[in-house]
Image (cartoon, rainbow, N blue to C red; front, side, top):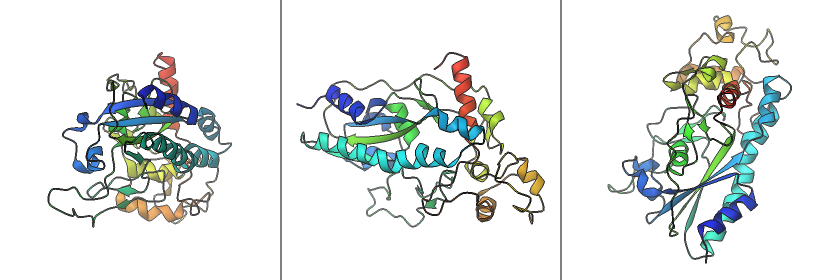
Amino acid sequence: MLTQEIIREKAREYGADLIGFGDVALFDGTDPRRDPRSILWNATCIIGFAIRVPRALYETAERGYQYMNLTQMGVKVIDEEFSEIFLLKMARLIENAGYDACVQRRVSNLKIKGDMTQNPEVMDTYELIHAEPVSADKPAPEIIIDFAQAAEICGMGKKGRSGSILTPAFGPFQRFVFLITNMPIEQFDKPFTDNLCDSCGACEKACKGHAISENGLDTWQCSVYYRGAHESNPYMTDEILKDEPDREAILKGEKRFDRESARAIYPKLSFLPMHLTGYAPMLCGKACDLACYRHLKEVGKL
């Protein structure tokens, strides 16, 4: 008989660092395009898994020694290679016991209709503006769950000011995947209620593009500086952006970018390969996450 404890043991064996069991009833009131029950109509549970990202990848980027491994190993490999094999193994375990298991990894470059934010990690995002429901009682595809909401419901962590999900074990240094199932669950984990983010502002001060404020993360502003439009980028030369009349303001993070102006400048920010993978090199080094981690350690929250 398959139990929660067996799932936890197997998840750890297959490489998960954190596991949480969330009650799908807690998604009541959620936009149907974000609701796991829109994916699996008889779902009872959403199971969350976190895979730790090595902190040293961020440390080396902060020092300017290496950036590509942070993007490749810390984002792409975990999301597109490790997580896929991991989820398929977990799904097989559950479905061999007679239940359904819908695997959910991050859909990095898709946005539901009306979501006009950007994912700075990828070359660009595609808003599903042409998606229409197949009938009046159904949501429009694609159904894309909110990973931060799901992590909170699974009792794993909560989104901080910078947009990263923070956990007591690793701070901002993990990637999440989920599995939606109709398997009966003995006991759900309690939703995460702690406020690891104390609004200290460390992430805001560390951001090279001033993309973080008390209102959260400006994803379009972030995407430009994530790609390296700043003075501390070691690949920046005098030739880059030389035709931009406000080049100095851009490099100092003083220019504000929106959906249109960010996309217009993307082609001019080509420092490391991205077309083969579709992922933008993390040339800001995610200084916001490092600053957050150090603060959490200093105040004893990690």
